[in-house]
Image 1 (cartoon, protein in one colour):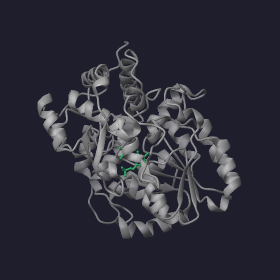
Image 2 (cartoon, rainbow, N blue to C red):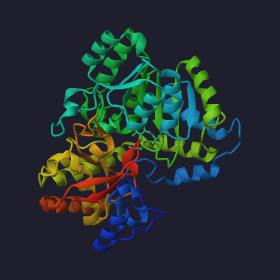
Image 3 (spheres, protein in one colour):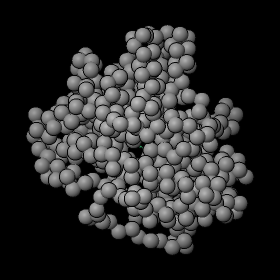
Image 4 (tube, rainbow, N blue to C red):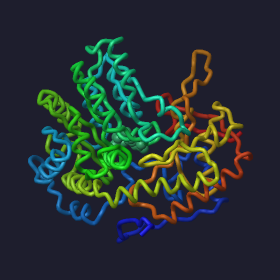
Length: 456
Ligand code: F0G
């Protein structure tokens, strides 16, 4: 059969309230033209994030009932630990309430003044944790990853030559950790190849630098390896994941992504000393080592989610549904980061709205237009999120102005995706009528969450 179906049936549903354009105009004005400030019930298709927004399976819900809530030594922890040990080969498994809690513990120990943490691209919470501990985050992405319209199989790869050079320049003693994000969320959800992981590992090993993986979307990355990298076509995704983790000294994970959980995460590693230090911090900030920041029921849901995520019928549908959206945009020559990523499509707002300069925030203008047109909520990843001011108060913009449409797992059907494509195409047709926006209020840190705007 040619049609790829959603490989699940729906047992429980949530209603979507369909707003009118008139209502949305009022709601968006009340939200100060920042979709973050909208109420979720006023959104028709919510693509703000794929984090914690997926649908759990009936087995996961059964796990919620089975979860054992003992303070210490819960059987739910031992199940969680054994699933993660089997997948990663890492003996020390530390549960946390979400990914950034693992980052906070890891970088409190590893980062610090005068230290560099190197990545393909650090996710913003990861960078914030590196920098909050006094260190500096350094992104060494491959050249292909910097060209939005270029089609290449592994645009999330690290630039290995630049890594060697950086180590030679700054000294291995000042680089306590290298961490690769799979898939590369901030760079378009693009995958990293096994070959690149191996090459980075070798460089790290030669310089005695621990090598970690930010594993939030490991299964999506491994499915791309199976599809695109020679030698992996006949391996199972689980085998590929086991190989991927085998090169790492440790990993951080947000279970809100590729573990189909609404909350949770973990930190895992080989080094017993680091595990001991991490658990000491865990007890102060999260909880006892056999529950971390989680309830026993969450540990069960995550363990089951990790078993389900490597199922290939699921991944085939998952990756295909985003590619399918990309094809609909290709038919209208709508610019987006190519190829489509594992969890999201990133519209290139700079190319979509070339008449809007960076200081009028084309990504923000586009996300407002998508909401007004069809009640779709995406997120700006551009000058609002990453813009800084220079000494003269002039905006310094990042390279790209994007709108990320992140697709929650097992949540929307093909007709929702068809509707979404229709909304984007409609906005594209009217793009010349779209105006920029100006900031009327902003906070000092992470301004994109709370900033307020006016339409120009
Ligand atoms: N690393 C990556 C690559 C992420 O995408 C995220 C979260 C985190 C770490 C932090 O995990 O949210 O559980 O604390 N990304 C979400 C997103 C928020 O929308 O992309 P967390």
